[in-house]
Image (cartoon, rainbow, N blue to C red; front, side, top):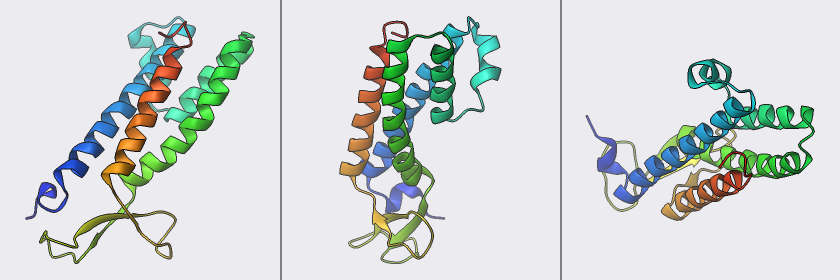
Length: 155
């Protein structure tokens, strides 16, 4: 049995883990903002947000603020929602995309063995996973979290 760390570079392997951690932190921040706005404690808030994807959580938070006529927050959340939608698409491709091993599927690592992901079916050209791609997604996750926290009520 081949272990993932044997055929994926350490930078890529750890980068995907960091991306997942940053993304989970952003999801948690948005969920807690919903709880705050609905005046729910932790045990009450979890059932409300547990099955929501990040974009859906932002839509809910946006709806709450639209209803309460918090115009400045609404403008900010709409801007964040667009950026989050782009991040989610790329993050999901990386984390959930079809993985193809360039150089064979015999479990051997070496020159030419790359981790590729495919978007949109098997007729599309696979894209290589690079540390640059991963670091860009991590940076956007960090920036989104910072921007989200600049809405004073959530910081």
